[in-house]
Image 1 (cartoon, helix red, strand yellow):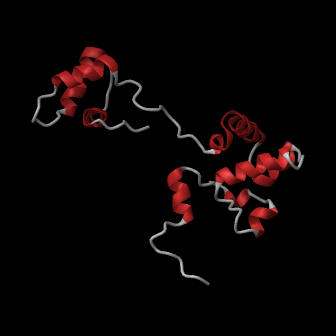
Image 2: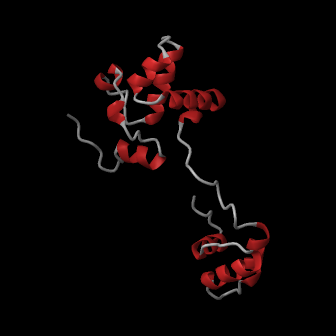
Image 3: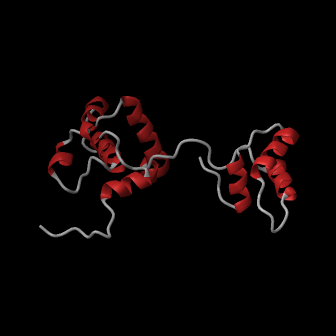
Length: 155
């Protein structure tokens, strides 16, 4: 058996980092995923694709496919809609929550930027209080620090 390259990250770690790790690989009962190294039940994109292919190409019923791949019928239909809309990229799970700052922009962000003094540290707690008073917005001090540094706020 060949030695594994220690510098190469484990597939599970990569799948987890990319958000494509199947949380329930033990529910996948398709024989291909049990007997073949190529098919990995931990890879949710591959599992979803094979489930769609089973129904579309092999004419399996949706009920049979969802049972075999360990997902619900609504999940199948959502997966099919995503695939029809965006192709294989539609099978990659989307991160939940807002896409970028949704409260802290426009006038409030401009106001904070006007309050900054070059060469002095950012007083994020104080700035958060000023934003709350002027705009009636509760902005976390860390959000202000990220915005000032030019980084995207977390989801």
